[in-house]
Length: 218
Image 1 (spheres, one colour):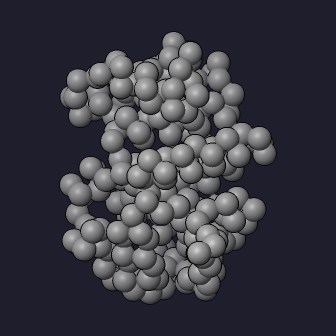
Image 2: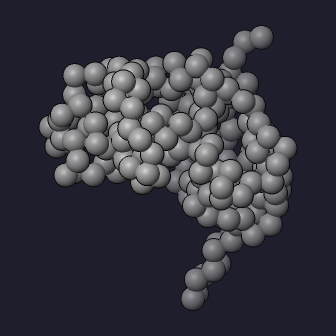
């Protein structure tokens, strides 16, 4: 379970001070699919960056399974999916998916990578390069890369923002399948229609959580 308690974050420039987050508190259950929605500049990406360990709060507490988060905990638990995919163009699909394993000097299990590619419907694309793929396929490679890292929590920053409606729905379908397999999904989006397909929606405005809504009927 993820628990944020009164998380605040301020950015200070030469002529401006921005309160990106103002005492934000949220709870995310294990195996839950959460969406965080709000207009550009509301603080949702800052919140995601703190969850990912890319940034740190000025005050407040971040707990994961009732333990204070540190970088080693996050490296095991959390994987990130970005709007712009961030695939390496000179590596093929198989190599991009295996990249987290290469970086950790872990042995690549070919059968396991094939299983992951099959999960995202890319079993026949291992030798393709990113420029040979559609946007939806590239995002699926990015998801497969997170799965190869053995992350238990997927953080997705506008994962459908660069995709058409059909590919957006394909990505959401994969997220739901992964949730049913035991992963926790936290997705940031400005698109409420996308957010409404999660289990629970958190709305942010001007650095604060302004509403929460359960989307799963009991």
